[in-house]
Length: 486
Image 1 (cartoon, rainbow, N blue to C red):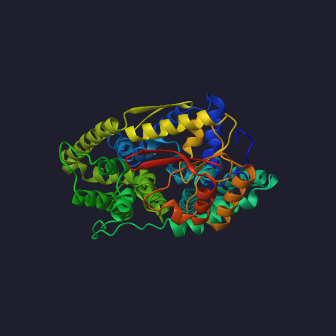
Image 2: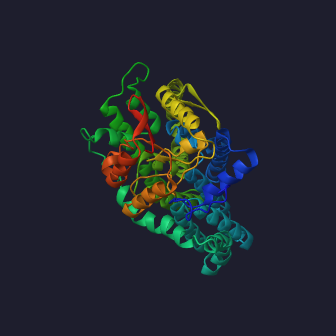
Image 3: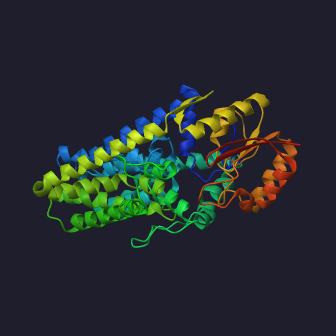
């Protein structure tokens, strides 16, 4: 975008444009450096924690209202590295939390200016993540109508959404990219994404599937931090986690939030709190339940992480209701969770301890990643001029960023749901027309997918014929082939 490219026309992505706008603004102000997005994520996490406190304070005393923010801070470690990387889901959730906080007032304060601000935040949320924005809009519209008792109050809210969305649609229409935007961000999400990324919540009684499905199952459903113990064959305080332990973690990860949603809804509807608290609880419960639906159809743990913030508020509220009688148990439970989080954080710091120095900054990674990425980046920079185009596939576009090289095609990801038969041929045609000299290939995509040669046999055959391997960097299960055009 900073180089003048137009999203959807020049760059293929199924994401809404908001995160790209934000990243472009940050890089234009602070320079194209790795630390910029990391610093932005620290600010975003702090803002999320502050909003969680502000929302929770309408339901419970300040000491208890701090609990969701504390739990969110612990969640950052359990979900590492997901909530340390600036991405569209936490940004969209931040806007949704802002919407909730604006609506947690007495009905007589829901005037046009406040509802217009709600609409602006909803528009920004839709701009960042389609399903978050849509579900948040449904929850906001229902809440406003129920509180105000009339439909016409939706006018200012709708005006805010339109003011955010209409200029964007006009911009893409003016640049011939409106049909691409609709196809990539709406139609493809409802078709290809739902076909290739349909991963339901694991059954509560089912065990971990046998090989060869074991790796993909654990990769998808374990908290990312815990999955590191699988990858590193690690131990927790000298104890090696078992399959049963992993299964318990998976079940608790998914079914405890569902139980909290059910308990929070029940208490909000039938509880005996003060009218104002009960009204706020119903609003929070409604938003939490609707936004939780954004988890589907791909219910992997990384996606679960993004829909939990309001669930944490309900969890704290439920604990507050039993806290007067079981305060010691609650404090002990939080202390044990914090202690286990500290242990996990210590192990993560030990595993991700090797510096990877790149032209765009330093990042701490695992030893095998430092070796392979460092050697690949150094090699590709040594054999190509700064203005060269290098094609990286199927799914590690960070090489473009770290190596300061451009992508000759429209596709940063070559995976099912992003690239089909038509796009596969388009990639071949572009490589042939531009005579791109170098290709970087990881032949084994995520555990969710088959090997690259099975996913895209035509493109793989083309690479075999025209791009023989010049260097192969290999460490443990990570492989990167540097292929040069004949």
